[in-house]
Each structure stands twice: as C-alpha cells, then as structure tokens.
Figure 1 (cartoon, rainbow, N blue to C red):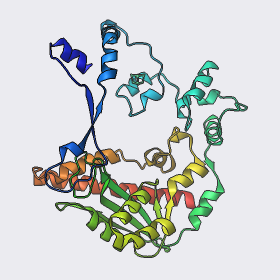
Figure 2 (figure 1 turned 90 degrees about the vertical axis):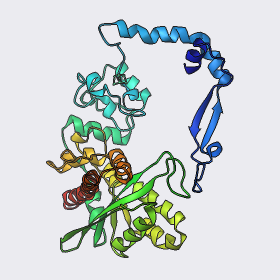
Figure 3 (figure 1 turned 120 degrees about the vertical axis):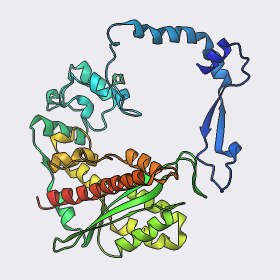
Figure 4 (figure 1 turned 135 degrees about the vertical axis):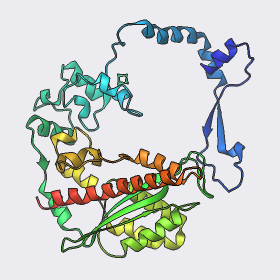
Length: 359
Ligand code: SF4
C-alpha cells in the first residue's frame, strides 16, 4: 500500500523492504549499531506483484464506509487474536453468556462444526458430542449444570506444600530498544517481585521489591529475591512465567545459577496448572487467567479497584516511572500503583490457596 501511494505521488521507488527490530542483536553500550539493530526483509517483488490488485482492494475497503450498517461479519478467533479488538463489546453484545468460543482451545474447525449444527451456546452442546476434548467436555458439563468441577487431587496437592509457603509474582518490561548492556530488543527485564509468605500457623507476611534506581534492575532484583525466598518452603506461582524468568536470570548470573535453578527445580508449584487440571467454575468463561479465576472463586476480590490491572499496563507504567523527565509526584503515584498491583497478584494467590486447599 505504501509503495502504491508513493508511486502515485510520482516517486520512483527502487526497493520495498520491511524493517524489523532484530531481536538477535545484543546491545554492547554506547550508540546502537543500526545495521545490526534492524534487519531488512526485501519484499520488492511481492509488493510489485500486488500493485495491480490495490485499486480493487481499496474500493472494497472504502465501500463499507458509505453504508449505514456495519458489514455482516461473523465473530470468531480474529476478535481476540492477536489482540482483543476494540469493537469486541459491540460485536458480542447479542451473544449468549456462554458462547462456544469460550470452550478452551476451541479450534476454528470445531467452531465451524458447531455453527453448522446451529449451536452457538455451550448450553446447547449435546451430551454425546464426541469431538470435544476432556477439558472442553468438563467446561460443557459445568456450564450446562451450573456447577463447579473440583477434583479432590487439587486439595491434596495443596496440602502437600512445604511451609513457609511463598506466593510469588514478577513484573517485567520489554523495551523495544534495548536499554541495558547485554540485552536484546523486546527482552523481558525483571524489575519487581512480590512475595506473600504463609507460615504453618497461618501467619501471613508480605515482602516486595521494586527497582527504582538507574540502570539494569536485574542484579538487585535477583539478590533481593534470593534473600526473601531463603532455602525453605514451596513457591506458588500462577503460570510458567516466573520459572522462565528464573532460568534466564540463572544464565545471566552464573554465580547465582545454582541457587536460582534450585528454586525452579525443587520448589515452584504452578497453581494455574493445578486449577486448569482439577477445577472449573462456570464463571471462568473459558479462561484460566487469574483475572477470570479470582472473582469466580473468591467473590468480591478482583483487580477492578486498582490503577493497574494487567501486566502490560504494569510494564508501561514502569517505563514511565523510570523516565528521567517524569515529575517526582507522578513517579510516587506510579510506584504506589505498581506495588499495589503486584501485591494484589500474590494476595490473590493466597486467597485462591485458602479457598482450594481445604475443600
Ligand atoms: S469484534 Fe472486531 S474483529 Fe470481531 S467481528 Fe467485530 S470488528 Fe471484526
């Protein structure tokens, strides 16, 4: 399209390239090596081949702009992948409370089979509908009978945790232009952790870390984390995110690798995996994210009262907080918001644990 516009302006374009940030380029400090930072993908031939089709494509794109009604397009996977569409609420307003798209891992093929059978709502999927996976069947059963699925193995697994139990969560940001020596474009940089520590007698305390200095946060992050986690107790996380970051930190700091890898190999318990395997609540609405699971299993607890309510927002907030031109009052506000958010994540893990380990 850009080539079409530029040609139309009378410019003579020799090459059309897509410029990608090269995530293999390792920043060595000082000015960026621009030849390394970007990798160019020459698409001249492809772009030229498409030129004759562009007028027709443009006409197709412009036509709906003159209509009084939006185009009649089925909702589907494109509404949430690669990100949730801004019109999601509008296009899904008339959908049932439990549309078939809420079946976990539903392929486009399955959605089409169900639509062909005029089934739009999970309630309408018959008992003997054979193409569902075990998890999808469980979801169907839970929605149809409006009941919680809870396998006793979940409580047993939680009862076997070692005390003190640490409930842990990390926050990271992924700067597109590498900021620190040795990092690459979009690399996850850990800058914050929260740890709620539950003793066997029920005492709960909270420790946290948020890097506010200049420079790379990872050294201070790692040493403070190892101090807080000590050598004892299970470490409950929600997803594989923390274990992946710990592995990366072990590669970065070989002298701490033994201690870090031992956390990952011997102490981490993924609550998401356990819930996914042993629990379903109709109000999960097909999602096992902590944002969906928490209000369903711990009514009244959510992230709605916080300034930050997801990891992407936390990452954007951190980038703003560390910018030298951010006024100190604003910086304080962002700092408090980040601490509240990460703390809520681990508090949520504790509340989920309390809710599930005694059933
Ligand atoms: S939600 Fe977005 S992607 Fe989905 S049908 Fe509506 S406009 Fe298209």
